[in-house]
Length: 418
Ligand code: GLU
Image (cartoon, rainbow, N blue to C red; front, side, top):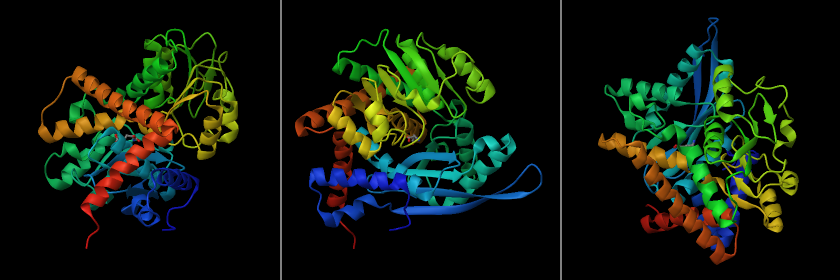
């Protein structure tokens, strides 16, 4: 099983072993639970605008098929490798199980800097990646969605490419599509909305009044920007924000709506304000009430964890906190952690709603989407909180234990064939 390497996979493995120990999973069952069922790597060739040919490495990992199709995003990023994609697929499994969705986890990606491609090249890459994946995906096999570096337009190209090969429109092959091509209302906002819904629950738990509370958001993509917007709408003062191009900090509060417009126009926050420009290295450790890492994995290590100065850590990103940092947070005991598995699950929950609507060709109103999203998040939040209190463990261990146990129980009941 040594094809899966690298620090992110190691982290997923380490976390899994902590959970397996906690729930007393027999040693002999662990590999079957942890290692992905399928991993596909593909070469994705495209014509560049200058007439040359470039080949990119693409991946798709399907973690387990025990509960239904696999589900998960597709990431276009320079740092993508097989170990990272496998870790993200594993985390998707626990996330879907915690939320009660009938899916295993998956993740895919291409090692590419999407900002270095022209729009035509991005379309060529997206279509060819999906075309290479046709033998391995399907509405009842594996359903893709957006992740870092991909968006609604990319999902529309995926859906169109898959459909062209089937000779009919198959909207249910991907989620996170534009509403005009079979997407659902509320999906674009779902992850950020979910983060803020759960921040409200966490604030209630520690008796923090969101009105006038301060927040810092790392990442200003779909998750970070919408989280910042929704926090501001709740009366929270967003004092720090960063993306891969720039970092802004102002104790008096930042103009989130203006920043969103600016970032959309300029492909990032760089140059928004010279006065508020700040050092991204120290952003996470600035004092604030609500800290939202909504970018990369492993940004909070033990050193950063010791210096954190927030009351709620709301993990919009997948895997932002290392197991060593978790240990520090446990010792400190003064930060309420909303673990990624729960905190960013609004995205995949509304993806599930999109898939259901596409299968039924029966579309919901936005208030229905949001209401059902709130219900599923509240149920998962309640399960996690009760379990954490009962077992005397962190929210992360509780959330992950619930997810792992669900998959484990289903595997046991189905048995091992032949
Ligand atoms: N990429 C997102 C995640 O990691 C969404 C996945 C989905 O909607 O299937 O949760």
